[in-house]
Length: 158
Image (cartoon, rainbow, N blue to C red; front, side, top):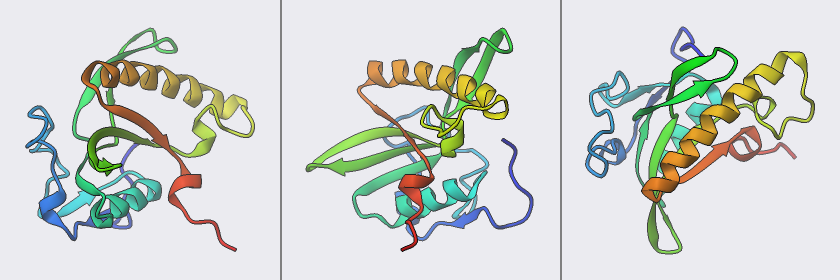
C-alpha cells in the first residue's frame, strides 16, 4: 500500500523518548523516513490509531513504525519479496516486558473476513504468506506476532 497524500496520516509523537527500538534490537532501522522530528508518516487511519495507542499507553514502553523487513516467497508472483512489518513494540504484560511484531490490516484482508471474494482473495493469500514467514522469525527470536484490525483499534459506537 502506498502512502496517502496529505497530512491526515501523519502522527505527531507526544512521548518522543518511547519511539525507536534500535536500543533493544540493533538492526531496527533508526534512520528510516519515520524517525523524522517526532513525526511518523503512516499508510492508513488504522495505523494512525495504533500509533496513538503506542504513544499514549503506559504499558507500551517503546515502539517503532516499519522497523525492519524480512524476505518471504510470494506464490502469486512466483518470487521472493520483502515484507516490512508495521510496528515493533515492547509492552509490559503481567509485569514482564514482551517484544511484539504488530501488523495492522483491515479485517477484509485477513482470514477473518466475513466473505472471501475475488477482490480480497489475493490480498488474503499474500498476507497469509507474509505472516507465516514472520511467525517463523518471531518464534526463533522469542517475540510475539499479532495481526490487529478495526475491531480491535476503533471503539464501537453505541
